Length: 248
Image (cartoon, rainbow, N blue to C red; front, side):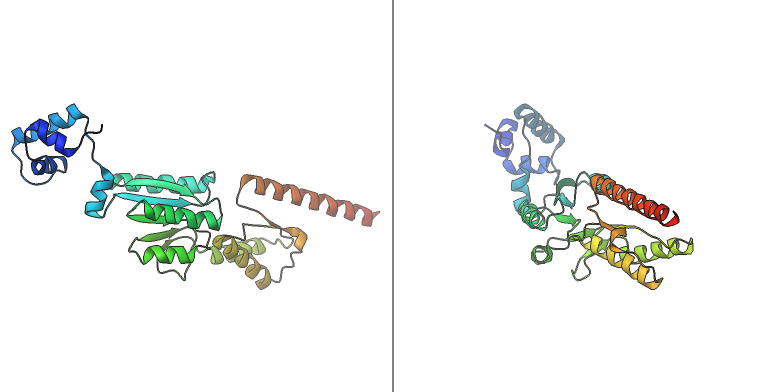
């Protein structure tokens, strides 16, 4: 049976209040009393009940991170950076993912809230606004990363996806390229839609005609990128064949 703080106090020959002060590094306790409590903790292999402590203090020193896809190298780099900062500041980390599925995001947000985390960092699909607002109303801070939803009253750490894509088209245009192929991201995600719109804005601004066969919708995964490259290789082959037939 797991030892309790009462067991520690009894073995050390001190009150429960004194044992609690020593274990939680609070108050002034005589060195000899402190040493007795430490020995009792070690002998009983006592560990703090973090759930009970969180109920008393309303803090678990835990931050949750809800990623989009754990196999995405960028997402894992993001998680490692968050983990380093959290560890240095004495916080634990819970990591989950949505797999780019809004329903999974909604379920995971509910689960993380029920874990009584102190805050949640979310790489959102952009389809769980109601759930995010509900958690905010319960005074749990939420920060969005990588994917901005400007209608939510939260802090956001993200690139300007719309402007970035417009500048990318401008750069390619200024290099002299006119026949441009585009691999769009997952249009079911907020940043996929923003990047798509940014590209379209840029193409229209420079009056570049990009036919449907020169646009592929991907999924931000390796396989999607591979399939897109194969598609453009096939397009290039058809164009070369047509050019040869016309020349003949």
